[in-house]
Amino acid sequence: MLRNALFLLAAVMASPAAADVETWAAEGWKTDFSKLEVDPKEILSVIWRDQIPSIDAPLFQPVADEGDLTDVDPVVSLVINGDARAYPLRIMMWHEIVNDVVGGLPVAVTYCPLCNTAIVFDATVDGVGRDFGTTGKLRHSDLIMYDRQSHTWWQQFSGRGLVGAHAGHELDMIPSRLDSWGRFRAEHPDGKVLIPNNPDMRQYWRNPYGGYDTAAAPFLYRGALPEDMPAMERVVLVRADTLFAVSVPLLREKGEIREGDAVVTWEAGQASALDTGSIADGRDVGSVTVTRASDGAPIVHDVTFAFVVNAFEPRLVIRTE
Image (cartoon, rainbow, N blue to C red; front, side, top):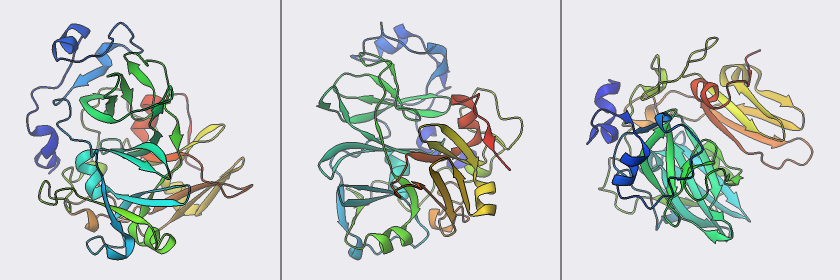
């Protein structure tokens, strides 16, 4: 059951609560709390800073040498300047952030299990490369990151600075996609795949949030839920020139949807990382690709839950027909 599976959050979690600036300052942050973009009451303190540890010295092996992943295992697929890398969700689930350099560019590869948001950011801010960690705090059930150089707190869903020196600044997002291992391997046979620094650190085959994406409501969320669709229904949020959203059930039915210059497609063969206790055994939720019709270039997007879109983009109408 879900309450038994949330191992990471339950490890030291007291009653999660909204905090105030004085409480945060007492936690030893070097953050400039005079710069604040949001109501402090929206931020929940859940676990300790860095208790979910980022991966700061990632290890990779050639695609051809990977023998543990199944074809349906979900991975974050990232290609920059011909450098193709896969970040399995069975690893991202337990670490949430990988600080890496891909194709010569410093990046933060991020995944928030409670929102199913997999987003890659350019880790350069004001010309300085940053590395990111987890604050142990959530807003709208979404990961709040911090950079270790300025201790600014950043919303993972939007890349926006919430608290600190860079409050109001937005990190640049880099096109990536949630893909199946089988498809990544076929498209990038010369690519690399992330492997655990210490395979015994976690049960990397396991989903600690068993049954989460079929629950009636999200965990650690206090906002309004969508009125016209299930809170946990998957939605493709396309961050093109004009922001738009499409429900995955509709996309699955049609196979392809076009909106302006954006082409959104769905293909079977990717397991849900948030379904059964074993990630590889999760139900098929498919892989989504978003490209420009004009030149085939990838477009920044993420596959998240309806409640997340409702929380962060309440005026956006999710296309269901």
